[in-house]
Length: 167
Image (cartoon, rainbow, N blue to C red; front, side, top):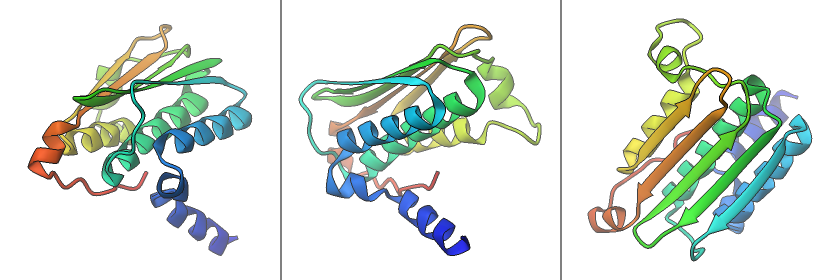
């Protein structure tokens, strides 16, 4: 069991689907897997001209979606999650909305409690590494909306190094 767990952790660092199929199929497969496991309805849409992104960007976007879906499944009591990936000439955007119980981002992120929101902080850090922004919009009883926007041209011009950070 320990060897199987270790193999799964290694595979999760950079899912093979990203290399083999690209971001869109990998996100679709993850959404299907989480939906089956959690009984949430997950809608996944893609807008704009699809294209492959740099490996670091694909990993960051995949990890954001993974953390958001896992949070929704574990904490939000959501029935429905909508994921939208938007390819634009200047940026790529990932929006994830759920209809769960919501929370107060300021209280969760800024707390010094032992159960601090390390996942949300990691999401912010990953997006910041590539010059992007992440908005976390939520309130008790109002669900949660995560909106990440990452500039594409700036990355290509400045050759920003963004290490793939494990989830």
